Amino acid sequence: MSGDRFAARTRDIRRRRLKRALLGGAAAVVLGTLTWLVWFSDVLAVHDVEVTGRTSLQEAQVLRTAQVPAGEPLARVDLTAIKARIASMDRVESVDVSRSWPTRISIDIVERRAVMWSSIGGRTRGIDRNGIDFRAYSRAPGSLVEASIAVADPDERLEVTEALASVVDLITQKDRALRRQLQGVNAETKDSIVLDLTRGRTVVWGSATKGPRKLEVLDSLLTLKASRYDVSAPDQPTTRK
Image (cartoon, rainbow, N blue to C red):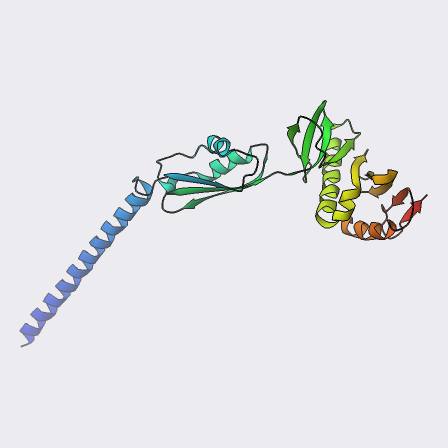
């Protein structure tokens, strides 16, 4: 009997080993098939590109710049390279590129939006909230604030432009009533911002710091009849008739 039990145990061990070997082989086949499908076949290749978020850009422009490799397996597409190419477009503020399985590349764009304009090199240029000069206009856009930037040095001019743009964007986002009165902004340094309001009024804003506090103080000051309001030191504001 002991011999029969030994033989039975041996057969059982062999069956278990064979079963493990078969399962392992099947798993390897499945894994190999999946690897081929994802990384090498055209079953999960790029067949479609979706572009969202654009406003002024044409889809064809975006696709030409993106250079998405049609027919390449989706898993192997270099999303970073596509993103970098699109981000280099003047009107693109930010972009996200992702895979949408099984066969689509999705491109979501946030375009730059001009908050003011300035005359640069004799041309009318739109400037976004980050101070980036990114587009041209055939004539001065009446819906935007004019920025006069009396700075020659390129680095200083960029600093001043960024400061002016941040103030205009703050006013646009937080105080629509003031924005309707705002006709222009100017500065000779990043700490000497001046707002030109309707009815010949001016506001000495100073630097771009403490913007929300300056808005709060200015709203109260504008109830007073004056030609000049100074909120550069918002806790010690002044007016002048």
